[in-house]
Image (tube, rainbow, N blue to C red; front, top):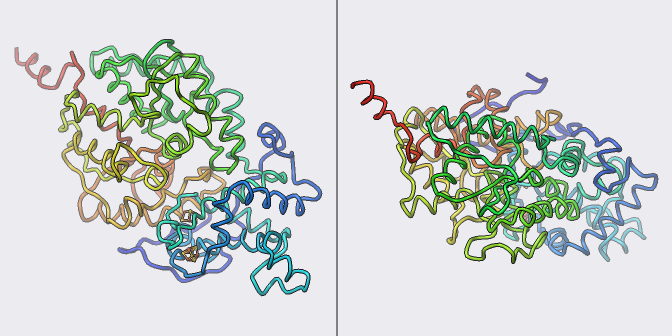
Length: 512
Ligand code: SF4
Ligand code: SF4
């Protein structure tokens, strides 16, 4: 375990005593020149970076009007101060959302507002909290804008709806544009461009993995369920996070999707070109890279001649898909307009459940008592189904259909007010483990309470980042890393395939 203290858990999440500067030197590794280059950014910090950063800020506020509104409208009411999991877990006041925003706002005020420009001439810019762009400011940006998971929880409680995530994204983009990008996110985006997915898993390895999964399902059920790759002319293209191809518990979810498609009798395929649902362009706040990553999905759908696109369990991928895909890579007029474009795998499964098309034995999950973690990007930045709150209802309805034992965590910690896992927004890297563990404190508090009071043994999620983050941080809070499960892993456990040998069949055969 690392050289930092895991926060102590109390029965209730409380506002901690401030420890100014305690997280001031905790930042991620800086991207290497080749990781910057493949994304179209300068290799390293450019000579006149202060001037370039100020210009890039000016471009950002012109291009993204919402950003300018967020920067201009804060009234310092303080409603957001105790809403960030990184502040609650780290106790550093610069992790309060309003303080995080002010790191950017103070420089914006000096160079891009009439009052700031005027007062600067008199040397009085400090009166309005305006600041020059300096190395000290850059260091604070670097550290504290990488202690924000762009989860948007603070915006729910702000009376003006100010979204700190948008400011974090703008700050990260400005830094990358002057030559200081983040190693983890930029390296991953480079792999997507070069190979097709975050893991750098080439097509032959992917094909081999899928073949192995087909064998596993056949061994388990006696039924041949296909996981096709690059099959042309099928109905559905499944775009899923590459973690689904090999990591636990993600891969069990992928087997669940395959079983659902099989039982629904639809034809489908994965694509080696779009073998990644994740879009780290969102995390680095760069529209051009987000668009380039999204276009692979469009190209794959056209090449394969599919009629529908379904997304697997990935939180921010669903945000990009639901909220931006049509703008980034549309129009999708070549797809079947009778289905949602795109559709979430949970919507797909829930629809079949409602039509009574799937047969389950929920007792297969009786050894667990489940709770559900709402992932930030699904909860606050997208929707599912055709009614408000569908993104909260649909995954829970699926779980309750396939499991007999289900309990929710405390209401203020789920739904729209859900606490982030602590590893979202491009922070899922070991160089930020202190940030991740501290930021997980509120979720761990809520989880530990239902473990102790309700006998919860497992927590389900529909986000690849949440699943990976929880596997890593649960042990820091004395909880088992295998507590985290995929929703479609639960579906897979309970789904009875046509022709599948059930426990009852086996018992009958043994008795004869
Ligand atoms: S967006 Fe989330 S991580 Fe960022 S400041 Fe707001 S609450 Fe904290
Ligand atoms: S809640 Fe909104 S207006 Fe109030 S301090 Fe926070 S960001 Fe500013």
